[in-house]
Every structure is written in C-alpha cells, then in structure tokens.
Image (cartoon, rainbow, N blue to C red; front, side, top):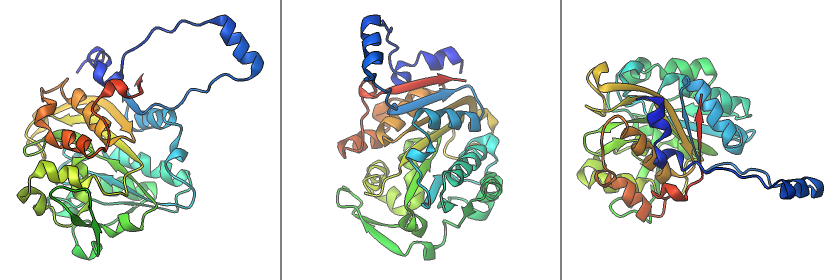
Length: 313
C-alpha cells in the first residue's frame, strides 16, 4: 500500500480542514492567558515507521503513557499470540511492539506487567515462534500461560450480553489494575476481520462457546465486560489479508507499517477496517460484530464524529 493511499483514507484520518488564524483574537488570548490547550484526539493513526517509533508517536499524541498506566499498578497487555507462526506471517501481534509497550509501562511505574493469550495452537510453541515470549522477558515483563483452566477461576457476569451471559476470564485480568488490548489486524474466516473486538476471545476459558452460539454476537457480547481495556493499540505493521486467521505463507501478508490507537473499541475496529480495505476489500456489513458492538453502545462507527489525528513518520 502506498503512503498516499493511507493519507487519503478519510474515514481513518478524518478531513483535513484549512486553518485561518485571526491574529487579533490570538493576541488577545495571549495577553489574557486564556489560550485553549489542544486536547488529545480520540484516535491516532500512524504510518511509515518501525513498531517502536509508531508506538512512541501514538502515545505522545494521546498525552503519554501516564494517561493509561499509573505508578504502582499491575498491568496486563493482551496481544494476539494464537498461532505457531513467525512474525513475518502476521498471524500474531508484532513482538517488537509488545516489547516496547512492556518497557513503557514499566518506565511509567507499573509494579508488574503481565502478558498472556489463550492460544489456538500449542501455547508454548505460539509464545516462542511469535517472538513475543522473548520480547516480553527482555523488556522485564512476565509472560504466563493462557491455556490452563487453573488460571480461570473467576466467572464474571455479562448482564448486557445477548448470547453470552457469563464467562470465565483469566485471573491475570481479574487481578490487574488496568489492561491494554494489542491485536494484530488480519483476515478471519468466521469473523471476517480479527482486530480489537475479536482479540477479547483470548481472555476467556471456553472459546468453543463462541463458535456454537453465533460467533459475531459472542464477540460483541464479551466486549460488554465492565472492566474494559484502557487503550486499544492495533498492530498493522504487517496485515494478513487472506487465509486468516493464521495464514499459509508470506504471500498472504502485506507490509503496511501502520498503527492505530484509541480508547473506543468500535472506532478502532472501524478505522482498522478502512485500513484493511486499502489492501483487500471488505464491507462493514460483513463484519457484523462491529455493528453489534455499536448496538451495545460500546463506541461509534461514525468516524466523522471522532477526533482523529494522522501522523506520517
């Protein structure tokens, strides 16, 4: 994908309005010390850098990691580590991004940073092949299994769920003070798109119930859990645009070098879908869980109403 295509994707980046300065009002604001401070955007889209550099820009634009991680907090980072695949195949979240985020959380004063996923392939192979295990440990984080029922001792209620009314959630999330959702953007056979909402399947014990009770609705339902991520960071450095969710070869992968970050899970997935469309056409109507999530009042698909900041490195 060319950079100009990314930049002209208005649904992601928002419309660029010409700025006309009124110097009399500007001078008056300076003299009276009442000049407004620019507020942080609702969503940031960054393109053109390596994962660490794009993360730096996104967090800086959102006001810094301190807006999401406080000193002494126990933090969980939830990537997609579902498949026994190397980073180049884009079946999992980029390990460089996860390592950089672990460091940032610890530098912000987090007392502990834990990383896990309930994987589809053997978890030990997934953790190793993805590069995430070594990246987390090198950054000072803790990586724990996600495929052992003993880590899911707490059943939580989903009173607003349609098909899911309760689920068992990984203990690390129950014990955490805050958590950050870090999916990889990719194609998925059943859900059509795997991104921020779909990534929450990896926090629950019984993944099979999703596939037997309307996958799209269950994805929306799990996102109604009241302990929501403080931030969603979408890894779009490489996009698996076909044969998802695990891919077959590097022919299924497009290197896009992009990242999206927001607190709004619906806006996040809507923007990510628009980015995905620059590589492979996929209609919003096909990704039913996004619309269902909006019906749950979890966020908005109307990106024109979202304050979006675009950054090119």
